[in-house]
Length: 162
Image 1 (cartoon, rainbow, N blue to C red):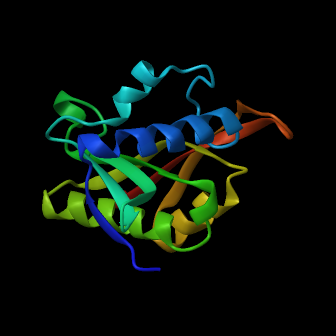
Image 2 (image 1 turned 120 degrees about the horizontal axis):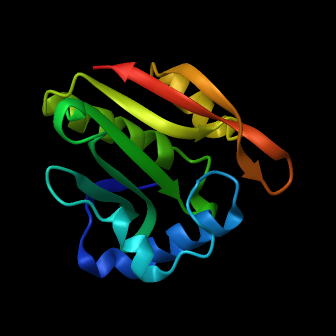
C-alpha cells in the first residue's frame, strides 16, 4: 500500500463523509447518532488548534483522523483524537498510521498526554492497537454502549502520557 497522511482538504469531504456515515451506521465503534446528517458530521472537521487529516492512496481516502485539545481551558494541555477507516482498508495499517500521526502531532505541540474518552470495549482491533501504542485503560463505564449484536458493552477511558 502506497499510503500517506496529509491535512484534510475540502475536496476530500465526499469520501470522508462516506466513511463517517458508514462507520456510524454500523453502530459498533462510535457513540455518534446513527441518524446523523451530513451537516452534523461536519463536526469531524477540526478548527485550529485542532487538525483533521486523511490517509490517502492516490486520490482515494482510506481513513481519517481528527485531533486537538481534549477539553478547553484547564484541560487543554491534554489532547484527544478519533479515527475512522473505510471498511475495505481495515486491518492494513491505516488505523495504526493515523494513530501514530496523532500521537506525534500532539507530542510536537507539547501536550502532556492523549486521552480517548469512549473506546468501545468490544472494538478489540482498536483497543489492542492503542495498547500496543502505550495507551492504558484507566476505567470502563459498564454497559454504556449499545452494540447491535452484543447488547450493552462498556466504554473505556484510555490514556497515554506524552
